[in-house]
Length: 180
Image (cartoon, rainbow, N blue to C red; front, side, top):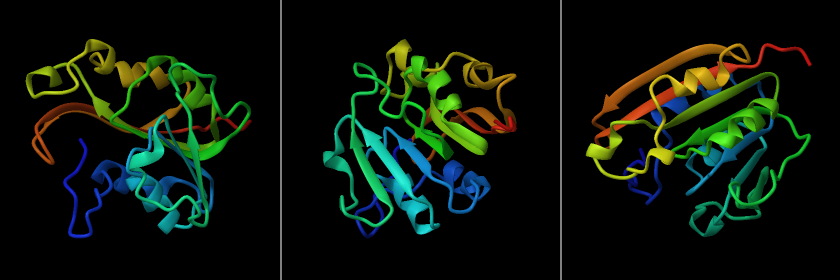
């Protein structure tokens, strides 16, 4: 669901991410996974969070590498090692990206009280365009199953959208209520 660039040439944040961003504890570090243009990194930086933006190619990042509070990490999350062993974040944001083996790592990276905000494509999206590969499309209820009994689900949607373009998506916001 990449957005349409605004008058500044920037892709605006996802309304889903904007809606749940205030749940991330104030000042807590945020991991923007597969950050792309950095639209969500910018959202959280503007809200006073230090942000780690990770992507396999940072050339699209629309933030200066020396932006205060930003750590930009270039890493192949599918072929390389997890770049954040032992690190914890108050927020983890993932949009338009799916690599199932990362689910346990994302949950483990959430600090107590940390918030996972996830939004990506689901089965049925192939009739609207990319992605079409089943490896990149969530199965029915898969996002819920990935966090069930690990995180407290705040909100979940599985739906067909029309804006910014037609797509089939699943969206989740969940909190780590585990103390340690």
